[in-house]
Amino acid sequence: MLKKLQVLTSGLLVALFSLPFGAGITFAANYADVSDAMSTQAKNTPATHVLEWTLVGGDTFATGEDFAINFSDTDFTLNSIGSWQTADFSFNDGTARTVNAVSTSSGVAPSCAAGVNNVCVTINTSTNVFTVVAAGSYTASSANATILFTIHGTTASGTGTMTNANADTDSSIYTITGSNGDVGSGAVVIEDNAVVTVSATVNPTLTFALGSSTVALGTLTAGAPGTGSHSVEIATNSAGGFAITYNGPTLTSGANTIDAYGVTGAVSAPGTEGFGINLRDNATPNVGTDVVTNAGTCSYATNYGTADTFSFQPSTTTAVATSTAAADCEYTASYVANISSTTAAGAYSTALTYVATATF
Image 1 (cartoon, rainbow, N blue to C red):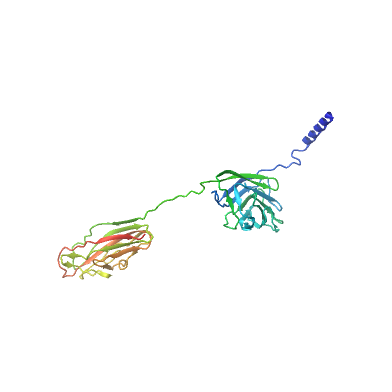
Image 2: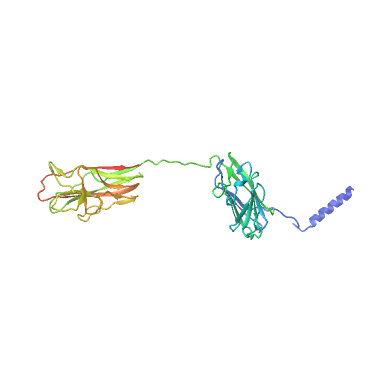
């Protein structure tokens, strides 16, 4: 008997090795380029999973075929089966397909309507397995198609949630198995410090610079105005903006003064007393420049933003420039003085105090 068994065994081996190579034998292949791009890997946080893999060996995805995606049931938690909707999934195999139905009972395949683009998803909330099946009449994918299967696990689209474990986890393995036996696997992590909070402080700022502490208007005559100017630079990050004000008397020599142009202002008129300021590019007389806006909106205060019109309110705190939001501005303050033929002789001057205020 032993000899007969040996002969039979030898004959079987000869028969097996006599078969054409690979005849009747199917070998599983491994999917290429397997990945899972998670929206977050923070602990105890719902995440969206964008799974991608590529078919190999000329394979397509066609009617009745399926993919089973299996996650570790200790590393992820699915909420109740009644929460999951078709809007919680998307599927693309080179063509954007329609998720027609999902499970209403855990692990039970839904009724899937036939359609050239229809797929359905079976959800097992206990084992964390998602199975995608191509419905009847499905138009097959191209050979070696790249598959994108998205599980929207954050309620951004539907109400299903897939929540990361409340523990730091390295190399959580997931597998993708096709109904033809092909497989793929990958790994994801859950990280204690997945969310890094970066902080910084911006302090309130206000900068202010006057281009000069003196302005010489020269020797005044009734036939022509005296003029002068200096820069006024201001910048602030104040949401409420800024105001630049001045305060001081008109030009004065002892008991004598030169009339101010007043609140509403006036044009320069040689032969008629007047002293005033504006912040514009003037032609008559030719003095000053318009504001240079480096950032934000730079505005003129009322009565100080009209070219060739000058205003001055003696000994009153008066705004010459404003902004209602953060801004960086370069103004030019221009001065004009006129006298009449009877203006008293003397050395006239005034000391004006400029103040910049920001509203934070």
